[in-house]
Image (cartoon, rainbow, N blue to C red; front, side, top):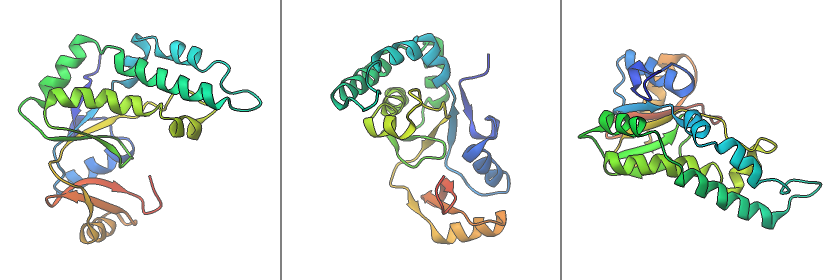
Length: 198
């Protein structure tokens, strides 16, 4: 079975991960980044697709039952938070990040994330990030799909605020031959996205 936590340069190159890998290979300094691809396995082993589908029965009909939606969303978040990762997956996660931190955890292609000071806190932050997929706004955004898309999570060693860097954006846009917006911390690239989002 594939490793659940991979350094950026070893992770499958798709989406933002591919772009960060490409830029790093071209000499751009990127904050230390690990790619975590555990969500689909976690859902499957915790029987979450069936449990979550059952929670939302009767919520979406001709009209949305808002009261039931709020209850189902809260119960879905609880189900995610209270389900267990395989012990060997948790150990691999902690081992990969050992002696590092603080961290920013976010989905590839997204800006918002969770902060953590230590590898152990990062493990809890990972579950919180997964649970966020069941905020009411997120559910309504992806409806009729109940389950979220399983996107890799980036664990990045970042101690402060990540900010847009216009000079780096210009350099990277020239290097790539297309317009991008770069976000950095302490002079190192954290995130790169299209100016039109994503």
